[in-house]
Length: 288
Length: 269
Ligand SMILES: Nc1ncnc2c1ncn2[C@@H]1O[C@H](COP(=O)(O)OP(=O)(O)OP(=O)(O)O)[C@@H](O)[C@H]1O
Ligand SMILES: [Mg+2]
Image 1 (spheres, rainbow over the protein chains, first blue to last red):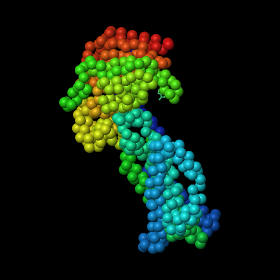
Image 2 (spheres, helix red, strand yellow):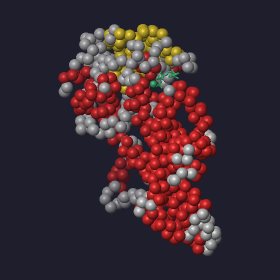
Image 3 (cartoon, chains in turn cyan, red):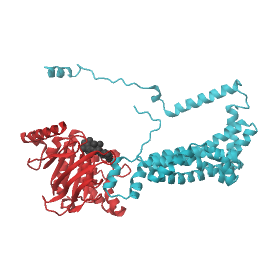
Image 4 (cartoon, rainbow over the protein chains, first blue to last red):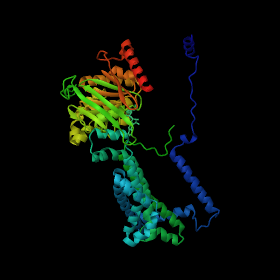
């Protein structure tokens, strides 16, 4: 009886297709670049209004246009190979050397702590203790030990960036699940083989997370080092501009400096995408 | 069909004892849980044995001891007349999860045991056998596919190939298909039967499904818990090869009921 009714109901024309009313958020239909431009315009607009009505003194906050003018000036100096390019180059070297050193140290300590019982028991507590200290406070020490050249900045940059890499590597080495460990055991794999062929590749996503945090820290380390230890880098230019109350210059220098940070970060993200090709990271991507 | 696959790996005649467990007991030192007590068992060449029992009665522990992954507290495990004292190459193992590594293609995953044992060059040479195995489990054309593009059933098929690439004499299977849906599970079980038959492999399967145990096995080891012991070893004298429609025969039903009663008795204790 029931069957017959169902059949009748599904005759063409007697029943309508069910229509799913899907909830569509407005933001989902807006391309990303438009959304980003919107935020940018609001930001600049607010900035403009704040300066136009002199809500804060011009010495504290320059207008957007003054900043833009100064950016053009600094940009020309950089492109023509002026003294600012030399300063940027020095800071860039500090960042790259510092990061390379941090990767070498962070990875080595990460493996020591993540793979050996000795490292976990005896070394990790010290690393945690040092990590909780305000690391920039070590800057005067590095200057005293290594002088006013780039060495002291490289050291501070590396010092700050090492810890997240240690933590990322150690966490990554613990990421492999029980099944994978057992499988390697059944195959008679040596400890070294298990580490290289299973634990490290499994932990690469975490290792890269550590590298990204490190990439941000290395920049902060280099600039702090320059503020506190002098030298001829970009941080020194910023310090001098600030002491002359040349705020548009400070702003534009910071913006150019952020390009260096972005470049390092982009390099890490790019290698992550190449190396950890199987791990699809979705940052901020909304899934509906 | 690859000639190497059809050949009898261990050389022993069918029916001869390959695996012998004598009074195996296991107490976990960490929590003093007696997981196994006095388990004695003989597996014959080419036979299919299942072990069934309630959760926590020591099935996985038994399998790990047989595989040489953990030592027994007491007793002896002998495989092909050599005591098992650690992982061995004549043992193939499979778990509930396929555990394929996402940075390797299907074929590279399959030759991983060779890579570990004999190095990269040997693994490269074994790629051809990996292709043959993939063909055997119905995955031809998937050699260069990465695991995250495989379905659960396909991944388990690849895991079967990985287990077989080293031509093991015995297969230890810990609920290998329990993560699959029932349809693929039945299919995989039939596939497993065919493979074991072709390779004259001796198989030992841990399962929670009475039906699965009966349809596949020559013998079913029924265990009871706390401490884990053998309650009874049940012979299954259904004809071979087994087919899925045997599940509807009265004989099948009888054996299933009998095992269910045994398991219920075990629970009461
Ligand atoms: N590594 C371990 N350390 C301590 N106790 C363990 C360990 N592994 C298992 N046990 C204990 O030993 C007993 C048997 O565990 P086992 O995993 O062998 O059971 P099982 O029959 O495989 O169960 P399931 O059907 O749920 O998989 C359980 O009581 C468990 O708590
Ligand atoms: Mg188990």
